Every structure is written in structure tokens, then in C-alpha cells.
Length: 242
Ligand SMILES: C[S@@+](CC[C@H](N)C(=O)[O-])C[C@H]1O[C@@H](n2cnc3c(N)ncnc32)[C@H](O)[C@@H]1O
Image 1 (cartoon, rainbow, N blue to C red):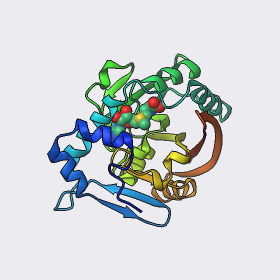
Image 2 (cartoon, rainbow, N blue to C red):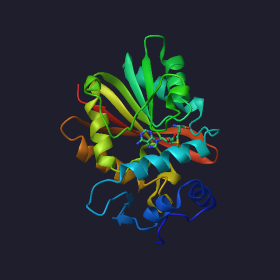
Image 3 (cartoon, protein in one colour):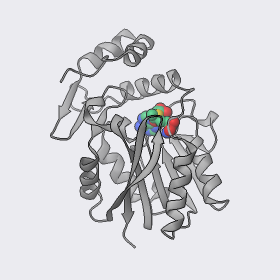
């Protein structure tokens, strides 16, 4: 498979917004490939994560696409109804990678006034949007550990280290709480770019969550969650043991 850096028009547009030195570093990056996943490696020559390059690219991509909304409100309404049907009353929750902040607004609307749901966003415009903090979702605030009835993301394909991100998110769950990750065709390995560095099949994602979260819970089901434009959304439901 070709090195997926500037393979499409969107990525070429993004490259024009970056410094030549950043484009050069991206051009030298490697892509890790396994049976059902691909990971664009933000490595430095001494095998650390090139966090400045990652943050720079994600922030510029966020600003380039700031008018876009990926998840529709109907999907968040459906996830809220699912949580209620499972007997989960959300007091605390977090959505990761939220751009304009809409998913936390919609969770608050559909879960009720007791639901203190906020969002993380890496871009430096994060706090312009409702209930949003500027935060890299690979990091965990110790105050969040074991405090959330729900963690949601449709942006996990932006992770440079998905296992680190997922184990952090699972650590935030209260007993019986849910980690909910959307999946669809655009999360498949062939869609990996520097902007969306991680791609994996649905079965691979389920297996990864079960491995990373083995001591905390397991994937209980994958539900049909409506669609985004022509793409059906499925949501992988990992539940913390009660
Ligand atoms: C595909 S967009 C989805 C936005 C929103 N969830 C929606 O449904 O429209 C991914 C978002 O995740 C943000 N992001 C990327 N990497 C991140 C990280 N490590 N931590 C927090 N946010 C991140 C991007 O800046 C972007 O706004």
C-alpha cells in the first residue's frame, strides 16, 4: 500500500497549510502495518513520539475543517437512550476529540440536567466551544480516574498511540460505565493518513479493547447507530465490570 501522507486532495490542502520542515518530517514517517490495522508513526529518530508535529498537524486540520460536523445529533440521542436502557444514570462523562463541542451539548440535552459531560479537544481553539477543554486525549487527569459513567469518541482514529489512549479512557470508568467508540468504513486501515493515523477493522477494535481493558471489563456488544451521510455508524460498547 502507498505511503498515505498526501494521498488525497484534503491531505494536499492540509500540507499547504504546514511549514515545509513539517511536511518533510511527515514525508520521512513510517507506517506500521499488521493484519487488520495500520498506524502512521509519529516517531522521532530516537523512537520517541514527535508530539510537536502531531499537535501541529491535528490543530491545523481542526482549523481547516472547523465548519464540519461528523456525528449527527440522532446518534448521540440513540447512545443516550442506550445508556438509560442499560440502567446507567450519567453524572459524569467525557467525549474525546470534539472540535465544535456538539456531542457534549447533545449528551447533556438527551441524558438530563444531572449529566456533567465535557469534551477534550487538542486544538488551541478548544475553549471557544461549549463544555470543552484543550487537552490531548492520550493523557488522563488523575481526577477523572474511576469517575465517569460514560466515555465517548468518534475521533479515536486520530490517536498516535491507540492502546495508551484506550487504557486511559477505560481507567476513567466507574463500575458498570461504558466506553463507546464509533466505527464505520472510514475507520478501516486503508483510510489511514497523517491526519487519521490509526485505522482498524471493527473486529480488530473489539479485540484491542478486550486486550487493553481485560482487567476492567469487556466489549458487551456492537450496536447499529444510524448513519453519517452514506456511512452506517456502528458503536462498540465496552462495559466496566460492576
Ligand atoms: C474527525 S474530527 C471529529 C469532531 C467531532 N467529534 C465531530 O463529530 O464532528 C476529530 C477531532 O479530534 C481532534 N483531535 C485529534 N487528535 C486529538 C487528541 N489527541 N486529543 C484531543 N482531540 C484530538 C481534532 O482536532 C478534531 O477536532
